[in-house]
Length: 98
Image (tube, rainbow, N blue to C red; front, top):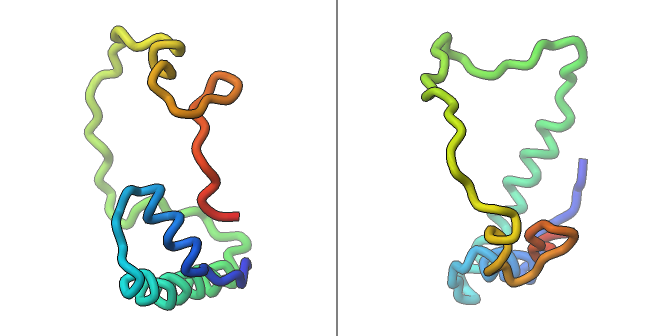
C-alpha cells in the first residue's frame, strides 16, 4: 500500500511526458480524481488473495493470434539512432513518478 498522494506537479510532468496539454484548472481537477483512483488501488491491495488462483478472464474465449513469422527488423543501432537519450543500449526516458 503506497498511501502516497499524487501532486499537481506530478500530473503536469505526466501530461508533459504524454504531450497532452492541460491548463491549470484541468490539472487541479485531475489531482483529486487521480488520488481517488489510487485510494481504490490501495483498497484492492488490502484484499486477502491468499490461496486463490489467478483469474485471467471471465470468458472462455481464447485469443485468435496470427502465425508468428520471423521478418526483417531494425538493428539496435538503427532503432536507437533517433533516440533523444540512450543508456547502455536502451532508450532512456525521464522518471515520471518516484
